[in-house]
Image 1 (cartoon, rainbow, N blue to C red):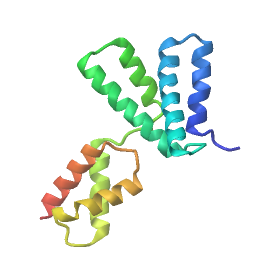
Image 2 (cartoon, rainbow, N blue to C red):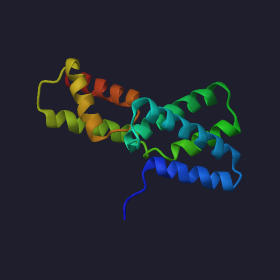
Image 3 (cartoon, rainbow, N blue to C red):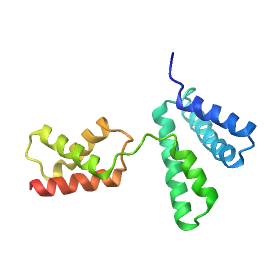
Image 4 (cartoon, one colour):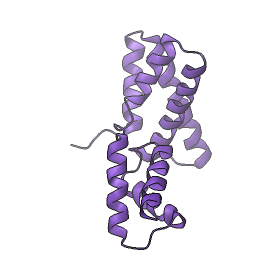
Length: 148
């Protein structure tokens, strides 16, 4: 049995929200579906990968967080909850720091701040989408500063 693709899950959840007359979910998923369709049309890709759908979801979550920070509302909070449910559970700061330390230890080179890109690259290839970029960047800077 194959796993449902993220795009298919969003479409299915949209239909469920539509039938349940859940306006908030229906409208949000409609916007996300629109973004997916536009991106597919512009790139000529017929069936977008889960990775690319994730990028759209992350962008949506980021903009909802910004909106909620400026104009907090129950609806935005609900939309954020719905959109974040599609993203993988994010790593805690402690987990990120542990992972960064492990990567640095495995690299066995003289690591300076110049090597930050290499460490970030390793982290992103191993834990793609599981942690906030700013948090990872700060953890890498801190770890390299300790080693310097």
